[in-house]
Length: 125
Image (cartoon, rainbow, N blue to C red; front, side):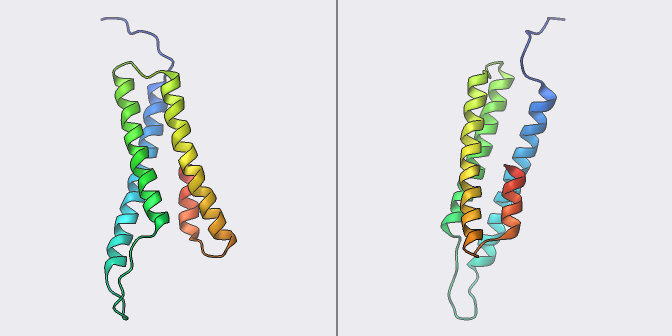
């Protein structure tokens, strides 16, 4: 049996983080897809509603997070995941989710926020 090169990464921790982040992002994407279907139906006045800019930004962040997590996993599997790569992808994800949290908190300050969305953002941050 060939000896594996020593690594800084604990696979159990990385896989746990990636699983939680991926499931969270997929749940958010699923909820946004469900909201898009519900909002696409006409209301009694005949007006169709759609997703807002905040929802599109959330969809973008969730999709980008999944792409970055897949890239991290592939680099890890090829033994090419360096601390700088991992740090960079996590800084990008954290920055984008923090901006989303700030937007939600500003909406809360102006009394037009969604409590469930705020909880989801805080948990996934």
